[in-house]
Image (cartoon, rainbow, N blue to C red; front, side, top):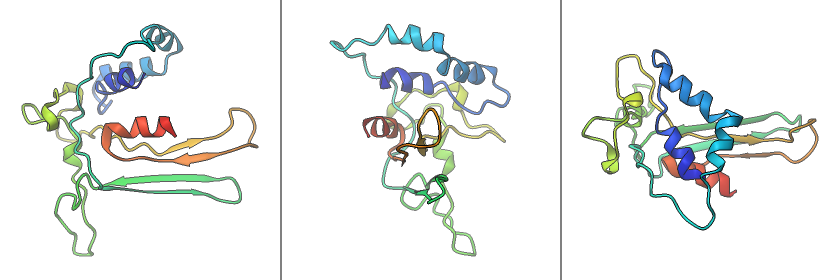
Length: 164
């Protein structure tokens, strides 16, 4: 299931100016698409590995997950993409993110992964990100058990959240 989800997600990128990204995202939440993909899942066999994400992994993400007494939940995840981000510090002491690592780079992707046209670096374009702050609440009503979590390590974050 996760290999299928990550394969679909590898076709995502900045939706502005790229209709294929919007179409892919709509398909990912479509009940009919989910029904057809469900037929591919077989508990007795595994699919071949999907292309690796070009994102670097490492201990460079932080998160704050808070639930207040009023049942408001806030989840914030931030990543520098490597231990010291871009290596640039502002005059006020803020370490800047190396967000450029979230793009696919032709012939230079991390882990020998396949570069994806939807996520190639271009002026004004936002990179794909695997920051996944997750809030779970009951499907009906506001009473019940709540869960707020997040994970890091790029494309492995999804499997961590699903396991929890």
